[in-house]
Amino acid sequence: MTPRRYAYAVCIWMMLFVPARAEDQAKASSSDWDITLGAGAAYRPRFESGKRYRAFAVPNVDISWRDTVFLSTEDGFGVNALQYGEFSAGPYLQWSDGRNQRVSPRLNGLGDVEGVLQGGLFARYGDDDRWQIFAKIWEDLSHDRSGTTVEVGGSLMLPLSARMALRLRATGSWSDADALRPFYGVSAAQSARSGLPIFNAESGFRDFTFEPSLNYALDAHWSLSAIGGYRRLLSAVSESPLVRNGGDADQYSVGLLLNYHF
Image (cartoon, rainbow, N blue to C red; front, side, top):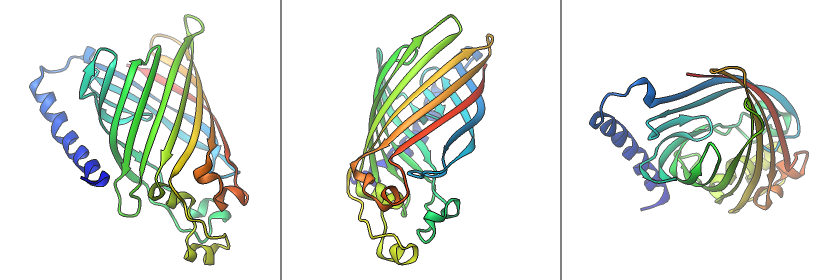
């Protein structure tokens, strides 16, 4: 089975598995749910590898049901299909944003990159309230975007006081050529329209990301989160003209979120 067909199979399995499991179990009480919703703003590059920054509105969603089904802005929609102690694994779906060439004159002639649904598998070990290591593999579920990416990482929670905690998260990713080409490749036609040199993206290590966040509990329900991020674009994409000709391999972000825990 090809990675693409496997990703589709994962999505179908999730659609069948989640309702079946929910029907087999007793009705959920309020204690079965763990829900945090929030919103805020972040200051980050206009587009991946860009040098100019702007403010974006950002949501924060973290919902889980009986530690089995989850939906979050960080991990997507998934199912802990296999659970053994502090180990869990299963399928998941997530959304990947595209890119509009109108956000920057540097993208003129390259065309838009569509946003797509991605499907894959995850495995993680540890307690997310303290520490965790994880690995993910996902596939772009689109004819225009059909690449595969592998990500590994870990997180560490450091309590600073009764109300404040610091979370450190680091990830590294590898992507194949199909996943890198839409954002970093420059075809002959795109080169003619944009003036950028031709670049054939090849499989390789895509980036390393470090994301610290500081959470402060205002009361039993409300909290503030200050988020930051540093992303280093690695060898597979750093030679692209989008990075070398006016871009930046070092990407930064900062933001502030107001959250409510039900």
